[in-house]
Length: 217
Figure: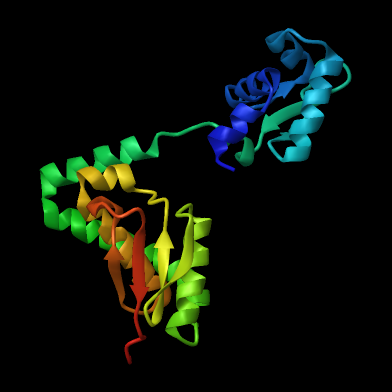
């Protein structure tokens, strides 16, 4: 489930509760949440119980109040991730800046290096595959986790990775060099040459990649 969809599926009061905690990194006591939301203690505690169970909220350090310390609640990383972030806009701005100040070659080098670095982190499992078929299957699983909606498909006498959801699609339409990241990532992750056999930028419904045989050291 995408984070934005998960946030919208929460009730209005729970969304407001999470936004209140987002704006208060030090945490908020139940009384403060009652005041901010305009609801009763029981209602706040019911919402907190649900959000605690989901892992979006946790108990923080108690707040001294001159008497009995008051329980404090803080937003967890999973709760923070519910709020949308326009990474694509920032990534496009950074890439355009590098194009303007350092040129195309610098952008290509950067994307290749980033893909190779992240791919190396996934290589421990995928790189040990016994053959290209197994490497293709493991790579598809890894890409699916990353949001590519990937699977393996048969193409002639071999399998290929097929991705329905290019995570850089809108950015790549303006800057096709972004696709170098995918190839560098997959090559580093599998330790094998990777060839793109079809691409959404060229009108195909999906992107497909052929994982080749491992080259001798």
